[in-house]
Every structure is written in structure tokens, then in C-alpha cells.
Image (cartoon, rainbow over all chains, first blue to last red; front, side):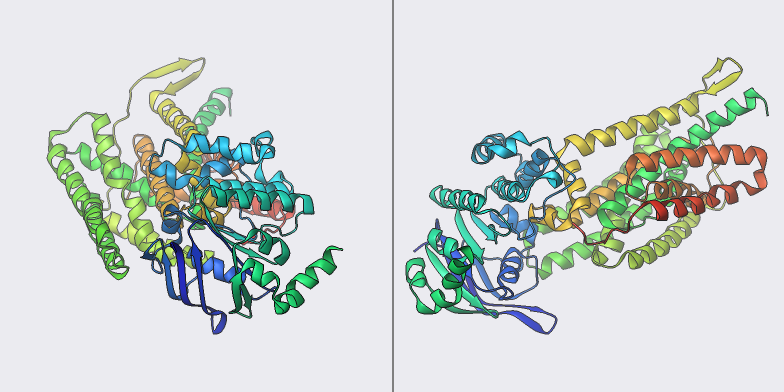
Length: 244
Length: 346
């Protein structure tokens, strides 16, 4: 077992309110791991803390190194990358400039291979190539998600963390996005996927955790979770009723 | 007023306006990236001019000591930080950047100043002493408060302005200085006489504005600064740290300030506290652009320069009053035409 991310006893608090309590989770190299759970369970907080955007306690071991004290910007250059729920694009800049900035730390290191990655991202999302001179703020919801993913890929992540990539998107686009996510794993990128759309998440993931009110309540291989009565009742049943 | 005077005033207004435009751009840049209203911008103007004047007298400018002191202070802060996060590998770079390089620069100036090198070299030396102060000031005064409100940052700016003005008095004394012009050339254009220096000012300002434009549009660091101004969280997520962006924008602001000072030093007598008014006029221009739009800020600054030129002809006693009164109609106009934008809107 080749662990890329090993989180132990992670606690995150907003003032006195603890949003994430003693969470432990592991991501193996080249796997998709999903964290599902209801709104307000602390999923977004968990990812923000792993990225170093929020102060937290506990231990986060990434690629064999403790990174708890490492700033977010340095985590990026070590291959950790977060696509946040709000996308956080540069609205008043062109699509191409957004992608360029995704590779910021690679330009700093004078990485000559950035050019190839533009091709790769445009191949993955031809829509972005059509709109590359357009301002990011003028894109549709689906295109914004593509751009957020594309910008993340420009950083050549080893561990890609995705926060609700399907949020607010049409079902067809959701399918596209999940296909891309599965394809990334096949290219060796490890993925930590946070989703409310539990059905889609468990279909694509290898392993899953269920987070409720800041604590992991169930974990297991995706297939096992998908047949766990508690998970079916709380997440999958609800989703299928909704989708009908 | 006859045509000759009117044309002369236009020339005067454009020359001053070009300088105010540069300062307005620097203020907009610093505010967009760091939310700091950079009142000490004007001190960099005075420091630039007076440092050049000292060098022309063959003296070691007092700002050299400031560079050493600020460098030591930054080194101390950075070392404590590095020890706290146990990043021992950063120590050699810290010592090189904040102790060895400043010592080298001061040594260079100390050696070169008495030999009275050519004007171009003097300008390079003056810039080498002043520009590094920009990021150092950011590191010491603003970076520890990077998440504070705009008001707190403004208060820090006011304090820094007084500190830097006071240091200016210590370094340069109460007497004003004027440097010889870059060129003595004069051209007759109809009834108008154009001085070489005012062409220098306008030309250098335009060149600097063009260079800034290229920097923002076509370099990765320029894009990183724009990105930070647009979306701070997004910028952090791609690895652009707010501290790096802050230092870079302060470096540019210090460069623009010092260069402005060097450009106007032959036109007007600069005292240790002259920078404040010059900077404030740039600020009025920046307000015309809502501290947001670069073209509007530059246009506003040129307007300020024009207004100043004509005001000093018609009612020279009320010159400053008239210029600063411009801000009232501008604020009324802006508050009527712009919608309030939430600070954290992205």
C-alpha cells in the first residue's frame, strides 16, 4: 500500500465551534477516494484545512512528509491542488490567463513543459479552447467548472482535491466531468472527491468515507458503502428520488 | 490670459500631470493587490529626489543607513519566522537578501558617490538604495496585518508616513534641493518654449506606463498580481502568496515613486516633506478612478495637473485648495454612479 495522504486526528474549529472533529483518512497513490455527507457536515472545511487555507490541529502526512506547518502556496508547488466549491476563478481575466496562472509555480521553476499541458487541457475540454480569449466571468456554470478543473491540471497535481464538482451542473455535464475525473486517475493522479451527489461519487471512487457533523461515521470500499443500508437510506435513496 | 500663457500652462499641467499619473497608478496597484492606501508613496518621491541630490554633492545619502537598518529588521523578522516553522534551509537566502545585498549596495554607493559618476549612474545608484525599501516596508509594516481591515491598514500608512517624513528630515535636513536638469535643450514651438526636462518627464512617464502595461499583460508575475487583485483565494490556490504579491506591488510602487522624484527634482525644489503633497495629488487622481481603474486614475491625475497649473495662474494663493476641492464633486459623482460592491465579492 502506497499512501500519498495520511490524515490523523484532524480538528478544525471556527472560534469555539468545531467543524471537523478527529478525522482520519487515507488516500492511496492513484486512487479516487470520496467523502460524502450531508450539507454542513464539514466536507468543505476538511478540504480547506488539508489545503492549508484554514488553521487546523492534528497530523497531515503528504508524500511521506508532515505538512501541517507548510503554507498553502508551498503545498501547491508540492503537487497538492484544490478545486473549491466556489471555483474561485479570475473572472476579469481570459480563460487562457486563468490556465496560465494554474501553472504559476511551474513558470517560477522555469518548467519548459507547460506548453504541452495547454494542449492537454484543451483536448480534454475543447470548449475552453473555443473560448480562450473570453473573460472567465462570461462562462456558463459548466464551462466554469471545466476551467476550474483545467486550471488545477495546469499545476500538474499529484493529489487533486475536488469540492462538489457537480454542484449546479446539468446532468450531461456532470457525466462529462466524472468521466474526466476517472480518466485522471488512470493517468496516475490521486483524487480526493467531496460530493453531495453520493451515487455518482461512489460509482467513480475506489474508497469512501461518510462524514456527518464533522466526524467520520462509516468508511469502506465504494461497492461496500453503496450496499450499506445506512448509506442507502441516508444518501442514495434520497438522491434517486430527487433524480426521478 | 493670452494664447502663449494658456499653452505654457498646458505644458506645465501635462508635466505635473504625468507625474501624478504615475503615482496614481502606483496607488491603484498597491490598493488593488493589498488593500493598503499607500500614503507614504509621496515619501518615496522625496527620498528619490533627495538621494539623487546627495549623490550629486558627492555625499553618501542618509537613505543608505535606512536601507541597512530596514534590511537588518527584515532579516530578524524572517529569521524568527524561519526558526518557528523549522525551515532552516531558508536562512542562507535571508542573510543574502536582507544583509549581504544591502551592505553591498551601501558599500558600492559609499565608494562611488565621492567620484561623482555620470548622471545615469547616479540615478541607478539612487534607485538601488530606494527601491528595495518598498518590499521591506511591506514586510515590516503591512504583512503582519495582511488580513486587517482597510481602516487599520490606513492607520498604519499614516504612521509610516510620519515616520518616513521624520527620517527624511534627519537624513536630508530642512533645506530643499534641486538637481540640474537631464538636458538643457529647449525648443521653440511657435510662441511656446518647450524645455528638455518637461519632455523627459512626459516621455519617461509614458514609457513607464507602457512598460507596466506590458508587465501586467504578458508576464507571469504581472498576471499573478492581477489575479491577486481579482480573487485573493483563487490566487492562493494556484500558489500565488499574498505576501509575494504584496512585496512585488510595493517594489513597483517604490520604483515609480523614486523615479517620479528623480524626474521632478530638476523642475521644483524638493524638501524632506514635499512628497506628501505630490503623493496626495496622485491620490486625488486615483480617487477619480475609484482606486480601481488604471486609465481613469491616469486621466484624473492629468486633470489634477491641469487644474493645478491654471489655479496657480488665476489664484495662486488658493492653488492647493482648488486642487483638493476637486475631490468633492468627484466623490459625489462616484457615489451617484457606482453601486456599492461588497468587499468579499468574487
